[in-house]
Amino acid sequence: MKAATTSSEHITLERDLTSSGRFFTDLGTAITKGDLFVKLSILWWGAGYARRKQFFKAIAMTLLEAAVIWFTVAFAVQYVPKIGTLGTVQAEQVFNMETMKTEWNDYDDSFQILLFSVLSFVVWFAAVLVVLKNLVNVYQLQRREELGLHINTFKEDVSTYLNEKFHVTLLSLPVLGVVMFNVIPLFILILVAFTNYDQQHMPPTALFTWTGLTNFINLFGGGGLTLTFGYSFARVLVWTLVWAVFATFTTYFGGILLSLFLNNKRTKFAKLWRALFIVTIAVPQFVSLLLVRNFFADNGIFNGMLTSAATALGIIAEGTTLNFPWLTAPGWAHVMIIIINIWIGVPYQMLIATGVLTNLPVDQIESSRIDGASTSQTFRYITMPYVLFVTGPALVTDFVKNINNFNVIYLLTQDVYTTTNQALANSQATEVDLLVTWLFRLTQDYYNYKMASVIGIAVFIICAVFTLVAFNFMLSGDKEGVYN
Image (cartoon, rainbow, N blue to C red; front, side, top):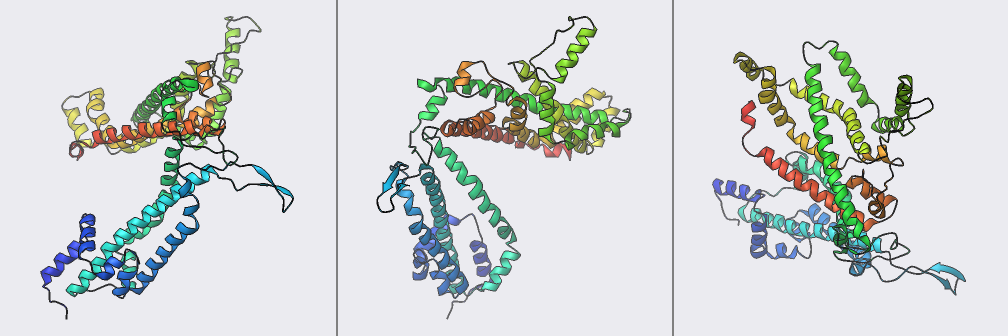
């Protein structure tokens, strides 16, 4: 006969069982106070559910455990034991006396070993989490049984995950997708940075091995044959940050000023101007950039127009041509890239700023006008702080996006810009490369995956640190009350 409990005890138990902040405390309690079937759930995942007559859950957990065991025995054991060396058997063709044919030997593929080992570790880690969570769940069922509380049927559990916990159901597939297509590739990227995976060690015909911190030392100027990588990294990093600052703030403030201009009552044909700027958004960016690249080529239309104008004005002799290196020389190319990006990026920011400006605190603006504030003072002390408050997070993401702005740099300079700096050329970089375009060239053109991985880690650290610092600064203090 189950012990009688009061209504208040039932309520307290329900609250304790649904508390998500006590997982490790509950886990320790389940291990120490759980009955035989709770402890047995460590070996047979469905034991606790079977004891409490939740047979569907018991079958599901048993099948999941069987799947993990099968994955381990049939798949993981082929690769995980080799993770320490990344393979030792080199690929080569041997003559098979039985078939009288030349065949490939049973060689090791270093990348497969790395990839499937990481996948195995992720699966095992997920399995451990399932086991621990399962222990807590079956102990909760034990407590319910001891106190005479209702234990859900399978139908009731399904109803719960379609109603109260529907968010868990919806998030299951996205979380699985993030793990498969983001987390695992990120781990692979990080691990490749500690190997010698490059064109000379290309699977499956060749093996690559662990090299420790060698690639990081080379990137930051450790010496040896790759000394130029340290020099190139410093040059490319500086330009990446300069580009990100100018590309972000020129388009941001340009969009705000353009929006103020178009929303001014004294502006004539505002809708026409707005439509013309929006047209630039409708045209695919890669089409616009390729056209602009040809327009500003050494023998392009713009230089031809300048030549014709200079000849007509008598500035240059007939037959002389002007070939300004708009996109083919250092300095010139840097400035032109930023200017072209302004033309591309301002219309986007104009649309965002227009939406924000329509919600300006009208009472504060009217009060400032009554107090005698000028238009510039209103803009400085009310309009701009409000826009920064609302669009601050977008400004941070724009900065990070521009650090990784592949399209603008690549489409404007690929097959156009050629560096004359031998140190940069030795490390497959140019003066106009961002870290992301340099990374792309290292992988796609030169198959230098090891250094590309190190650069990828550097990009991630830069973006992560900036994002954390910026958001922490923006979220500190109670700024929301100022505009409410």
